Amino acid sequence: MTRAGVFKYPDGMRWNSGAIGYTLAGHAAGLLCLFSGSVWLNALGVGLVAHTVMLSAYLLHECIHETLFTGHAAHRRLATLLCAINGGCYTGFEELRRKHLHHHSDCMDPVNIDLPPLLRDGWPRLWRLTLALEWLHVPAIELWLRLYAIARPFTDARWRAQRGRVVAAAAARLAFFAALLLASPRAAVLYIAGGLLGLVGLRLLDAFHHSFDLVVLPDYAAVYELPAGRDRAYEHAHTFSNLLSVRHPWLNALLLNFVYHNAHHMKPGVPWHRLPGLDGRQFGGDRRHHRTVPHILADFHRYRIARVVDSAGAQRGAVNLGAVQVSLLTP
Image (cartoon, rainbow, N blue to C red):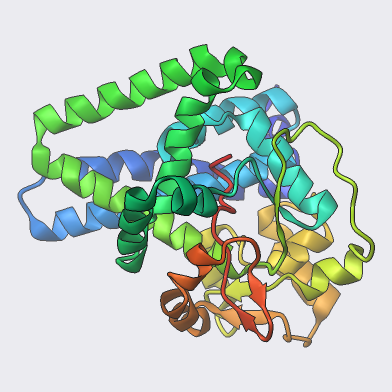
């Protein structure tokens, strides 16, 4: 099969090759920079790790919608590699895919568990620690959800079949971090800092892309009965495009155009490199759902505790607190 035949869309060959190549090579280059004695190279390394963690999540999103390659198997293989970078390996591609497709078809944010109430009612000390970390913008809820994904096959018989994969993923990541720590404790700390920065960047955009309800679905393979009124009009009214820039749209490609979220929800099968054009055709000069990242930064900071405490829904009256637990990478 020719290289062009590998990719689903001929016009996406160079875009996807560049995005995948940069994400994988950039992550490795960022890691190498962390071993340098230069503060500037260390800063570059942290930035590269953070950026490529974000891009690995957005490429995973493209794999979920199968917009990159001609077959499902190729998407699954790339997704497995990407999840090794961003930590989605504990949940697994197929479950993450089912979860995200529920999000589209049912206009909601599905989760296996609503974690904040469980922590508040059952683990008060851990809850207080969580709030303290979230106040500092440490993504504690996301980290606890990853621990939940690791523990789930050993505490719930429904997930027993995932034990082997979870053990293998956890062992591989533990071995990597142990080797990194032995080689350079400083590089290990900087790598963790870059990873956390990447998660915070993902949370910033995820928090305000929607004002959907959070719905607990113990099994993503189950059928969810859609409440009345959850139609295309509802979906568009509760979806927002948080752009890096309106004036300079090329900047949005730095996040694989994931920020054109209304256009993506209008036609989820459209690949990332075509979303700016689709946004222009569908919405023209109507920018009521366009917001730029600088405009949401203040609310991201202001409501960092409120959105954790009130985790069941992003929209509260006239205020959009933002959402938690809606990551592509966790159950």
